[in-house]
Image (cartoon, rainbow, N blue to C red):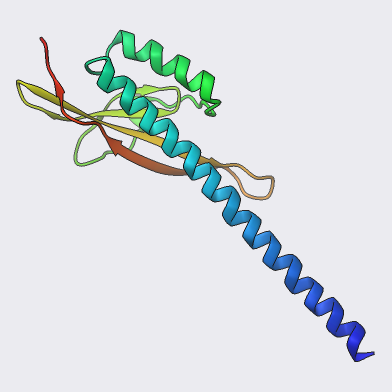
Length: 138
């Protein structure tokens, strides 16, 4: 009788361990995807010489091709980063003009890692990246 109860106890521990490990694996894949999206958007802004109409279109196309889950976020709902307000919200991303002297621009991009499970409501974890210095041609 002791062995049957012990077997069920060990089986429960194995199941709990597997659920925790799969949770960590899912979280790491979600983080990797959000980080990849943020780095891609950063590269688009750098190659487009700043955040403009060309980069807006390229960002939207890039998010469609990667499969990033788009949410409508208003600029007012973007959090304040480094005491800067967001200049744009593009398909679930918040874009900040971090540094702007007369010669160079630097942008900050926040993408979100979304966790939306049946028992857990929507959780947003922000991922923030800044671009390299971009020469201002204007």
